[in-house]
Image 1 (tube, rainbow, N blue to C red):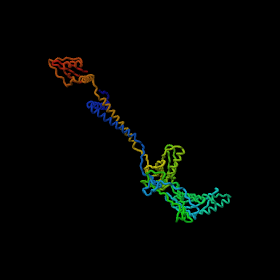
Image 2: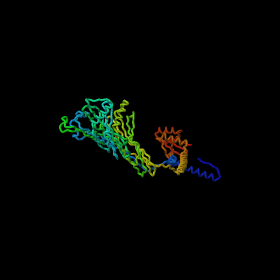
Image 3: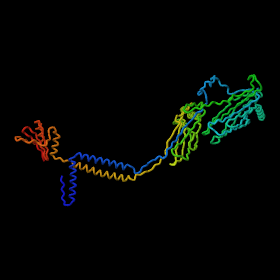
Length: 561
């Protein structure tokens, strides 16, 4: 290709110089095809890299958040419990504790005495306040009343004795049957009725102990009342005493639990030795009171409801922070949930919301027998229910505190999961729980260099795109343009590569050699096949010569422009 520009100005020579440079690049690509491929590949890789640079520049946000941890803290909670049970054969380890005769009939529920041989009766009442947790002070006020139920249906109450004491006290008083006979006679005369049996008054007498207790639990003064009756039947010459002389009642006041324990005792003094009771017996006494043995069992066992007295529980909470903490207040609440899965659920407050300064240990009782009885009542009430219910105890702690990096306001919850059956109770093994927390600050950051970074990535990508297009255009333009005879020679070479042999110069013709011109290359190939000779090919500019030499005969085909 020849560029023809006619001009006398310097512009002509500048264009000419530029064109010559382009022609130089083109012929360089033609002569060195590997250079052409390398430059195209290199410019393409640079363009791809710059495209990734642009993508990264525009996907990077102008503004982003950065979080920094200023303080870390940990909340820990732990349940602990022990179950107090009434001692018996199950947990006894001493064979000597077993009675010799285990299957003997129980004695009657009442004990009978004969008034003709009774000279005097002395009665005692012992009261004991038994807290499950430590208390500061206990005051007890005891009143003993005699309630006469007259023969004709009337009733009269008489105060026999008043006394006071602390958590354990005993009061004694005489029981004068003659004074009761006088009261009955006076009342019967006033009423104008008389019911006697063989000339004697027959009536029932109830001795009733009424105890008013005031207790300083350490948090507040608590008051409660305990009442224990004991029945005596006076017949015609007989006195029948109720055998149930002792009574204990367990009470619950939120996180505080305790027992009232009362016991009546008596001593009957006889007028003289009698044949009925034998020589030397001048007084008869009730059996001494022996409180049931209580055994504490540790966590993780199966507990039998029939012998459970109380479950003493505690929940401890600790808060640990790697930075100084001030004004820490923890509000704790303990609730129990009795549930029949997916059917019904009832929630009870064991410990109402209570504030504590700093870490704490909270003690509270759990009335297992109450929940067991409630489950049975609801089961009978609705006419359905499984033998096992879910019983859970959950402690919720709301902690607030201040640090130099900001306030802490967290809620921590820990649950003790139990299975309450008809006769047994079991608790899960997960007694401890901990949770981590942090105080963090979030900052919004910007990159002021990002706009310039994006602009430069676009500029560089644009330049590399121009370079790539420039190299690609020259690579395509630098392809050699083949003439028709060159294309024909290439096709023939490809088709008859086993027959055609390329040579630089043809052999010189002999003086007597005959040259036979063939009209086409295909005809020459046929001659070569017949003679079993190769086709010699000489390529020249604008001319291709093919020939087959057979002795002094040369078959020749010439292709030229």
